[in-house]
Length: 440
Image (cartoon, rainbow, N blue to C red; front, side, top):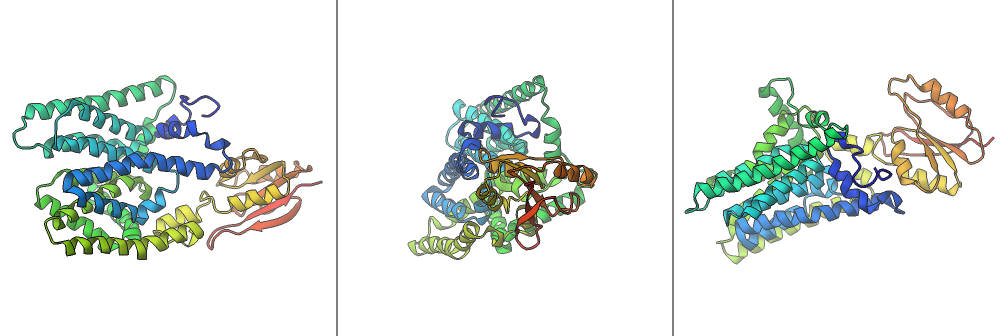
């Protein structure tokens, strides 16, 4: 992508092209610490979404809605974890929050500009990641739930038409441009949002159980119960907008065969917003003592739950309390990145010139070491069909300054020629990385 220019369509087929375009101008691959820079760039993209989220809280429930939503979001360990990873999901969720905000302004006015911004934000969310497609219905939710007394349906439907035409035309033109350039994001779109072949009766409860169990590891089951109670309270108060924006996309997600907790950043944000608004509506007409107690409870959550989590994540991420699925994916997975920094530092200390990385996350090592030495990433096959080919490659590369990083995997050679220099240990439950020198 960087070689072809910022408007290149490289990686368009993975249905999150705008994420790559967002990172490209910052050139993280040229930075001394590209991972840190990528995280900072991610944070920059999250700030508008955060502002939009708490602004909806203020519009819906006044200054207490803003304050409580802010504290809930800041002390969410789920968001703390996933928004540190430089993923496309939080970026898309940020744009979805903007979509919710511009649409919620329909409760105050029916301006064409808000409709245009709603459609544009929904398109950006889709371009950042295709899983935002269900949120194209936010405009519909706004029109049917945010109609003040005295406003005509004509004004409502005009606003809706502008929002829908904006998001549809922009998205259609975007996909047409990709298809015209030889790229097709639709297969990836279907793989992320496609409906399973199994019965809806079994699919929705099964997928919901998976995700709710993952979220409970961060928010606890009582915390999820509070989300449900907040939604019921909003429905009882005839505040239908947030519950509709929360549960309608969730039903679509739960129909998909692809389930991962990182896909749920946007619904999790809307869930927190729902709790913040419901909580504020409950206390804003109450005494000062109840309001003070509410803030105290949230600060206690921050002190006793979020702070230890954040400290562990910063000091020893392998020990962070994650859901079981996330622990396997982000800690034990061969793509987690654990060991790469130690490997890089050791090879730099050895003045390595060429490194043959026979490992699953070879591209991660290449990215982290750009400019320090050349990293060769030979093809490996999980079926073991390339083991002999890899062994021959290592046997032929004896030269000064050439090193091998060999991961303890069942589908690569057991050992490498040359001298074993060191072994990089992963967290318990993970394989190791062995570093060899191929000096003749």
